[in-house]
Image (cartoon, rainbow, N blue to C red):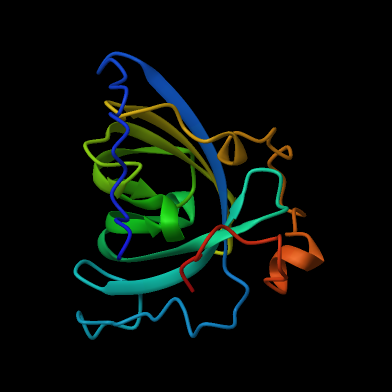
Amino acid sequence: MATSLVSTTPLVRASSTTIQELYVYKINERDRGSPTYLRLGHKPVNSFGDLVPFTNKVYSADLQTRLGITAGICILIKNMPEKKGYRYKAIYSFHLGDYGQISVQGAYIATEDTYLSITGGKGIFTGAFGKVKLQQLVFPFKLFYTFYLQALAADLPAELLVTPFPPSPVVEPSPAAKATEFGATAPNYTD
């Protein structure tokens, strides 16, 4: 007799006004060929319309667990030489293994903290909306995210609610998480 993977326990619906916070680090370890810069404007400087597809690794806020990856694209909408940076339209998702996926989008300014919109999700993030704060630690290699999630079906699992390691340009994942050792990864983490 086959067992069902669908739970028969009813979900407890959190109020759409309840905000649950989730913290993660996104780290580009320069081993995925990412980001790739596609100069569609054919200009010697980064310019309007250039595309930047990317994928990076995602770690828990305490840097002890590899959770998954991000995957998406940024479209350059403004070169800001006076700020030594760029403004992008960002569209991407956080793929977190058995926990599910969170999609985000919005204007991303590479020289300052930015808020993006949470546009949905699946798994434990089904129906989610809200905003996410993106803190640039080392452009484009290290970022810290604070998700303000609304309309989740239940409370976030305890293993995602760890105390964040203070954001800093020198943060590094634990050796076990980086090596994806048993016990240092999310269930069926996305690679």
